[in-house]
Image 1: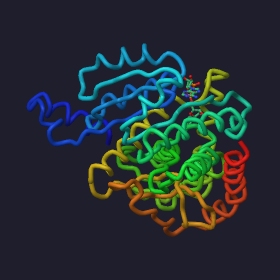
Image 2: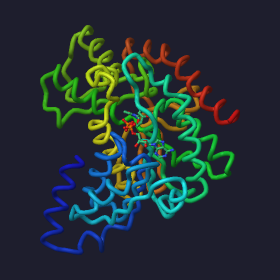
Image 3: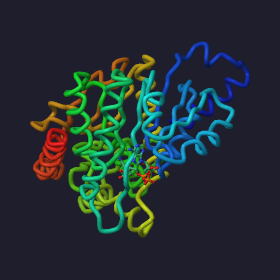
Length: 339
Ligand code: NAI
């Protein structure tokens, strides 16, 4: 896990100072929206990641304070804060991985799609800057609706002539994190050992956890699988309602975002067999973008893995999600081309 590797490396680096920086390549990570509810704890977690050598924190406001604060932590990376459009280029230049949690979160009664108009514009302008200042960076898109913001990013990069489908990822890790937690609770197994692929998209019924492939096996009855599926699909709403107007998931999202960025960095560094679910350009179904297991490597996506065997319930869920996911993808493409 992320925390195990952070701990081990911290222990090692105090025994052999300099070891990590000599053997681990330099990697710059930029966080766009770094002063937000997700951005701040994500900045903290990326500061704890020994694979990062430079951490650039960008937002339209408040980044100097966040950067000064995080920079005092005695770990490897050098932290810089950037604020406002004028400093975006500097924040991005030389980045290996750009993580985007910029935008507005949901309030009770809102769907992820309700965020579309504001966040689509933010994502579009940030991606234009990425195309200009760090066209080869891996992009981790957190801003919702991910089902549309990833296609928007792809269109922006295509227009700029920099699109590399292997380097654009919609972050769906929080769906996997939730599916693992909820499954472990219901199946009464050690949560640290649980694996559950989650495929499709990142909103409501487009989130399709494949509990038939969950390990350790638990042979849960159908009604438990149905309840777990629904809870995973509505996990975000559970948090939005509990926060009662103060936003959506931030802490669990920061954890999930840090985990996914760490997997991207490991892939870049040539660590073998790094597999995570992500929403990527895909031929797994007839839809142009789809979340499934992805093998990460030195160029980003090494291989988009198939769905594996599905239960009848999952097959039905897959057919049901396709029209909604298709229209969210098309909405993103249309926005990028009309604006
Ligand atoms: P927040 O409102 O607390 O923070 C957003 C930050 O983005 C603010 O600091 C704001 O100043 C900044 N921002 C706005 N426009 C910007 C721009 N043009 N450039 C750079 N920064 C800009 O919101 P929160 O809770 O951190 O959520 C951020 C996004 O993440 C939302 O779109 C939310 O829906 C999404 N999200 C995604 C999840 C996922 O699983 N992929 C889970 C939870 C949230």
